[in-house]
Length: 115
Image (cartoon, rainbow, N blue to C red; front, side, top):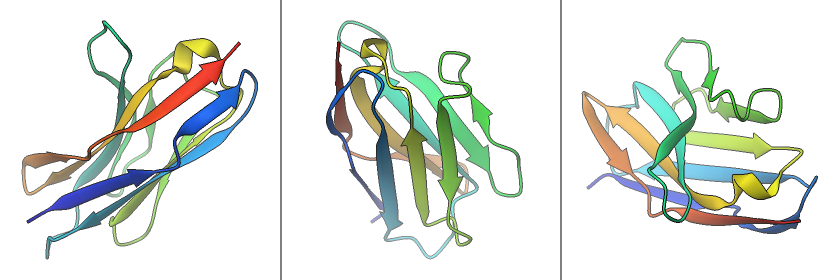
């Protein structure tokens, strides 16, 4: 079955950087779109950044200019470079892949930004 495995989370000081990675396996089809979401304690899951195959990346206003999403050519790996992190970025970050109209989720990776 389709599996998404995230890595790269951790504890970082405010102003620091982290790079999240997500690898997709178990599908003979490439993803049509790849996205990163996050969920902070007590809040709903929100879209952070996403990109469709052949499309331009899109970002939440709160991360524009600080985060950058990228992917490999085969749409099997997606990355999120996070710079100038602030405590408000603390959340569990989830990778999402849209494959033939079905969305798949990773297990999430914790990002904690200390003040």
